[in-house]
Image 1 (cartoon, rainbow, N blue to C red):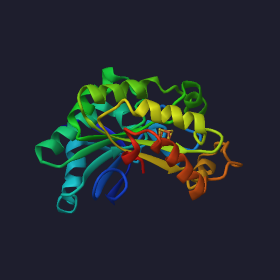
Image 2 (image 1 turned 45 degrees about the vertical axis):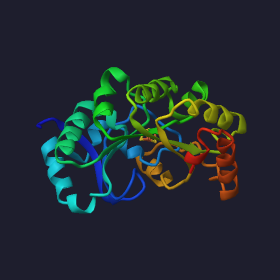
Image 3 (image 1 turned 90 degrees about the vertical axis):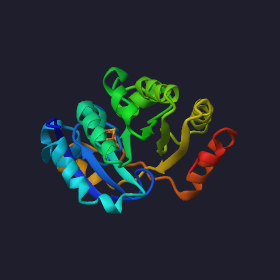
Length: 245
Ligand code: SF4
């Protein structure tokens, strides 16, 4: 377990990235450049605060083992599957120690690299950035095809999945896109939950700190009314309506 991981940070007891209380490992490095990214300091792998082996990370997690028995560990990012080998080994070690695992990913990494980590973990939290390929490119710099292939693979192996989408005015807050998203997700019987997350501006300061212009300055976060309308659109689809949050 000597593979070294480039790590941005840790959160010892997170309550939103997967079921129950969780230890979160935020990996460093991401090939995407989402316009709303709240962790732009996680983009460049070489800027990692920590370089640690799988065993060292496990030791850190083990200190919290008693607190996460109803939850587990989520490997997030950046994009965790950019370091697929590290993820595989960490998940293997956690599996051996009966600690549940989740991978929080954009699905951008090809299955040739990401497959095994996905097979090993208990849950995939998949961010569908935008259901349209062109929209996704505008929002993140890359299309949505790899995320779709990732989701199809999870269905083939019947892996539990939570879907996430950030709702952003002028981008994903769009009735026609939400209808297409609802229709698309209805075909996946392995999806347990679909979370719509309101865009927020908490990362803006970090963009200033790294000296990159923040292009969404004029965009306001959607209010609860708009969020509810977005959820209602997805709930029109019988197969997913109970899963929408
Ligand atoms: S995938 Fe996540 S870490 Fe990467 S740019 Fe998008 S929001 Fe930021």
